[in-house]
Every structure is written in C-alpha cells, then in structure tokens.
Length: 218
Image (cartoon, rainbow, N blue to C red; front, side, top):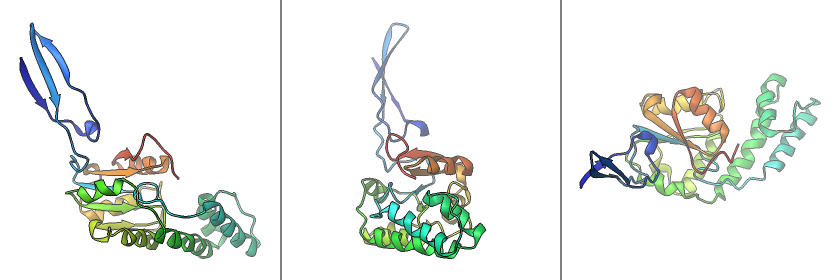
C-alpha cells in the first residue's frame, strides 16, 4: 500500500477532510490530507470583521435606532426607514450625518468597553501573517474593543465606518485595509459573520470565510 500526503488547497483550509482510499490498478492507495491549524493560511494577510466575529459589542441596537430616529425628528425630517443602517446611509443627503454618526458612535464606544471576546480571537493571535480589522462600527469603538481584550498589538490595521468616506458593503473600506497591510486583494482573506461582509469581499475581489455556518450579523 502506498501513502500519499496531500496538502489542502485554499478551498480546504479550516476544514477537516477524511482519509480517502483509492484502488489504482489493483493497488490500494490511501490519501491522508494534512491536518491544518487555523493559523496556517495560504493568504498573505487576513482581515477580520469586528462585531460578531472577534467580539460581541454590548449594544442595544433598537435603542440606537430610536436615538437616530430622534435626530431625524429633532431636525423635522421624515425618516426614510426605521432600519438603523438605512437611516445612517440617508443621513448625509438630508444634512444630519454628523448628529446621526455621533448618536451611533456613542453607543458603540460604550458597548465596545463591555464587549465579550469571541473564539476567533484565539485564531487571530496565532496568525503569522499581517492582520487587519474592517468594521461597520466606528473606528474608535473598534480600537476600544481591541484594547479591552489586549489585541492592539496583534492587529496591524483598523478601518472603521468613519475611517474612509464609504461603508461596507462598498469595497473601499476593505480595500483600504489591504492597502495598509501592503498586500493585493486577491492575496488576502476576509473573515466575517454577515452577508454584508461577504458582499464586501466579493466587490473587493477578496476571498471570504464565515466565522460560523453562514450569515448571522449585519
């Protein structure tokens, strides 16, 4: 019997693959895929989403939406939606962007300081390639969360909602992160928890991986 060791392709990373037995011309050949640690990657850099991926921001998002709706009401502007992120996207067009951003960011900063750490942090700490964070949350909240969990030195780049002019799922925040990491988009992996994250990676021309079995966040 011959034994072949097969190193997984990018598509096999972070997955368990059972041994496969083939018979070639009457000879039994067993293929043993190598066990790949999560910290081993075929990519030159890894970028993580924050909330729902590395930490769980302690934020009552319904209360945030109420505060943002109050900003519209104070300005005597009919809100285009009751959905928080749609209210944020529309705010610049009606002249309340600064007040809306301030209302959301205040909740995020407080919630970041109380955020529990999620299991993917252990994987991040084992990475041997440059690591970034690209989040829909404001940059200050991202940095507070990283500091709270002693991750500041482990993360090379932080791009938040207010770091560049656009937010996810526009690709620019993610592209800015990989530019700062000095890698090409196709050589980097984005890890997140939402369909928005997946769409952002697709638009940026980057590989994507969910932290769980599928989309669960915003």
